Amino acid sequence: MEYRQLGASGLRVPVLSFGTATFGGGNEFFKAWGNTQVDEARKLVNICLDAGVNLFDTANVYSQGISEEILGKALEGIRNEVLISTKATFTMGKGANDFGSSRYHLIKSAEDSLRRLNTDRIDIYHMHGFDANTPVEETLRALDDLVTSGKVRYIACSNFSGWHLMKSLSVSERYGWSRYVAHQAYYSLLNREFEWELMPLGIDQKVSTIVWSPLSSGQLSGKFRRGLPIPESSRTVQGGAHGPATNFDHLYNIIDALDEVAEETGKSVAQVALNWLLQRPTVANLVIGARNEEQLRQNLGAIGWNLTIDQVKKLDVASEVDPIYPYWHQRQNLKLVPLPIQY
Image 1 (tube, rainbow, N blue to C red):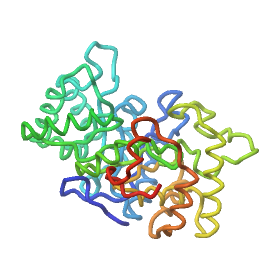
Image 2 (image 1 turned 30 degrees about the vertical axis):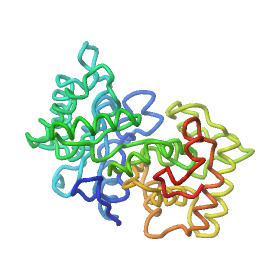
Image 3 (image 1 turned 45 degrees about the vertical axis):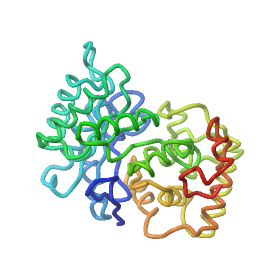
Image 4 (image 1 turned 120 degrees about the horizontal axis):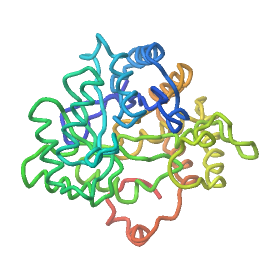
């Protein structure tokens, strides 16, 4: 297992982490992801540890806390061998203060997560989204208090815009508070908008990227094929997919290129797609999910080897889309863009 430094921190994390949104299946949305219960979760955890994957990612909203509870039980007796990442901000109740990144909600959310996870600390605590109704100063001071109390080790964000992250880093610097060391973001061969602003920001500010949905809700798993029906077992069909509607012509062009590279490397389409991400700037970790042992072992095969420069370029070309303004204008002079990627 390869380990990488997480942003401007001293923490080293494996390049793969195991995402536990498949644990619990507590509602219709998460049932489309999976319905893993405690016994199976323990098996998956042990497979991860055998492969050197010691970072486990969850969130309080995953099946309304059930995922955290199952992960906590699966980690009984081995808590000191692993890192736990969880999240807060989204709605966790019907009350007027049961959502957001206020001091009230964050302190309560952290304590609830600690109880469900059966642990005394959260290693990486993410803001699951940006709360524009709460002053950034309030959010970051509450997070800094959680760090100084020992309940949280490092803080990170997720799904932020560029200005959300930059303003937060500026406030942390101004007051000497803990700063976000990572940004958990949506990024894949099919969805490369992350590169337009968030990646250059991460390079400049030393904020690592933890990638969620690196196979784009399974669309880059190798099961989606031109001219064939969408698999009935996919999250796309079952209502668990994210984001806008897929441009299937673009998807299948990417899959054609993935097929070529997979044949050259002797790897699967999914393994090639994951390996491509691990060669992108700022990427420290990919959150991989799995409904069963077979899927998990397949995803673990994405490491221990690297695509060639020519293979990376082939995938770059197949997945490239025209950026929106002002990014297309900025690219007219690449010397001004701190992004070491061939276009």
